Length: 408
Image (cartoon, rainbow, N blue to C red):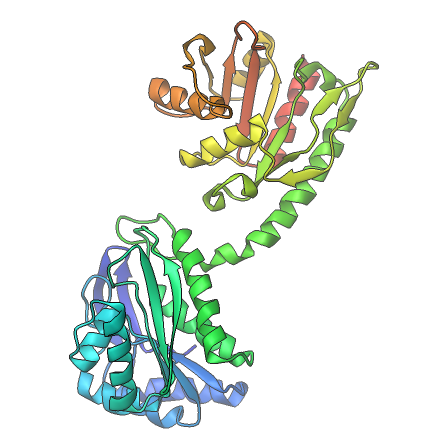
């Protein structure tokens, strides 16, 4: 990576821009070229005419994927000398990826519809000789958006649903970088754009709620599959743990127990992100414990639904178990420093199957203003008294359960 400027910024905007000199930029690019043999390069913010000329000269033999980032989200101008930018950068581009606003600024053509995207894409191709133009549709109104790709002969569209998400800082950079990465792997332009769009949609969906302004998108969500592999390993270890824990049978209620464990809470979007045991955790006649392996994602147990309801409220919980109600257990959990609150199940309204866990969380939030780690009820006719206990970390859960078993 070659740095074009040092910016003073946070999520609320850019305060100052300190561009590096053309000589410093040329030195960075030259040193990278000595180490890496690359065919494609992605350009983002290139600030002024001196830098434009360096890019044009130093990367003359590369195929440039250009993110035309003219203004930041707060309105700060990130490209000075726009006419020189068109002459030195756009005319060297292999692909440009403007949004509707940027495309309008570069051509003078107003973009308000899919048809306008096609018109401006052709104009960019003809005005600057860019082989491939991708006009993104995120700024065009509608519930469904399209990226319009033009190769000089034909148009094709990549459609996607609009995501209502505040935290979108870095969308253009992620999109163009993904295209460059896919092209570098030998993929064609069309498939590269499709992959980049899928990556961007997920990154927007999991945008990070940080700072007081517009947070960044999060491409890290791609590691969700590997996160799930880790969760499955931890579920297996947890099952072995409770089967080997002497006296754990004392904690199991009449309806039996189950344990749910999720990917990090910020990445939970549904039951498919939460693992639980297909069978329950049961006690046998000889005071042993049997875990209902295997662990599976997406199984709608009460513990999985409750964990999903917690994360939906922003609670940083990734592990949850239900255990037998015992006043001594409540006292012991409080001794560990956990808050415990009671839910009155007699107040539960009539609702459809699977809504009880959501109601419990809503009841606690409404009556206590937050969700403590221990939620219990003393039961009612047809409903066994129960303790529901969550932690943010499976090791904390194990340590707490071990303490309960030892002290009960």
